[in-house]
Image (cartoon, rainbow over all chains, first blue to last red; front, side, top):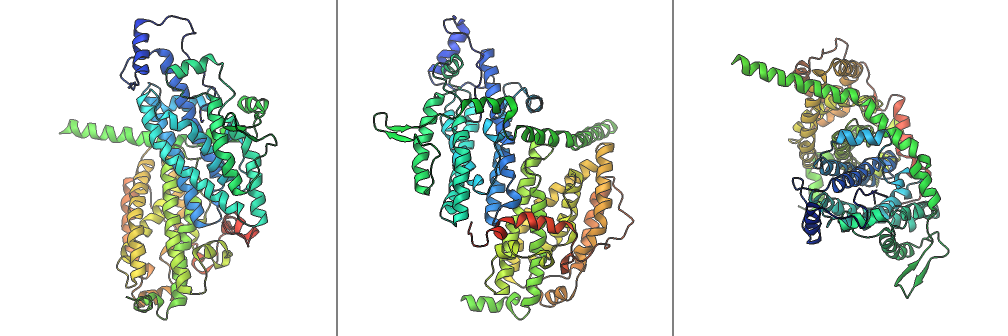
Length: 331
Length: 266
């Protein structure tokens, strides 16, 4: 997930719901979609803005680690695929900011919060892409983890978010296959390429597991978000599913998952695996990841250095309107 | 038609292959290097819609490169591929015009360069759709659809930014003044172009100049920008392999992986 640890604005357990709130909850329980003009509790709206906003920010910050290899992609075809992929991420950002706008918050407001550190993006994008296999690993693992969360979100209760997710999921699963195709080529390549592939897996495995967030089985926020169907599964369920899907894929590649404790557990029908270092996760969220400063710095620089461009376009639009009005007045 | 017959029927493969190879590299290298420069904006554009549009433009240009350099490699007949040409030649073997290798600069420079090149590219491809070489005509027809859109978009942006705020006007004029002396190379030609012209494969580039002038003048006028008084053809040489210092760095970055791991397949 591109949205981690989204704090819920709902009522505490045991607090009574008003008749309006109860009717709203009944609609969600009946599987109805909530649409922008429908009444909704303020907490639902705020929580969604936070979650969709964080997701949108992740898409646009997510352009950077992959964009880092566009000018160095090793063939024209790989270059074209990577550019198309990064373009898709920007497109996802666009759908998601638009979905957030239906909740009454503008893209500029959300960007302002991102740029001033008041909103987050996924921790994963604060890790560097150091060799070409990282572009494969990002597609395979990072998009793979994102899909785990986003497929169920196609059934989320808020209509515009669910519909954006349908389109995003189609593209993400394509990205995941492209990522895996790079990994195949690298894992079956020269000794140097295999070493790059293993290095990429070593560095991206635990940060990918962190993408699901810490265990939230006991979390009040999580319970409220699940009741609202903003969140569909617990973090642990999704992480388990991700590991179970990914380990055989790593084996097929002939790569070693960097977890000595990894073992199939017949009883639960899934793998036992080591938890990521949650201290590291919280440090990354606090801004102390390897690339936090660069990533946010790049976004802020793009925004500030582009101010004249946006202002120029607005100035033209104003002039053009004034000219049209003057013409109408003259006629 | 059998492949051999088809090749014989295409003047591109008939006797002029040295010139044809050079000529195809001039186009393919120009789209490659411009695509590289445009792709440098990915994730860094001033507004999300521009991130998407610039990525799309870069993608189109890389797609054109695959077609032009693929055909160049075929015409050469030495067993090289489009990737070999892109990744295994040094700067002196590159045939792109200097205009496209200049650093990306600010968005003013990127938009203005895009426009000046698009106006030329559009005229060139339009003429190439009538090439006597079916292979060239086919690629031109495909690329023209995309380049028509590039030109529409870049013309619109030049007008809006030129006639926008005082600051956007200043930047667009500065970009135009900086790029102008590099534009003449688009219309510069030599024996390679004479051979292409004689075989009716491609027009001599000088023939495209009037249409380009007219298109550029229209847009600059609407954009309230001044056509520079300086010479258009100050900076030539890219088409014969004499480049600016910038190209070496572009290639060092672009070619790093295939050069560092020559035995790898990607």
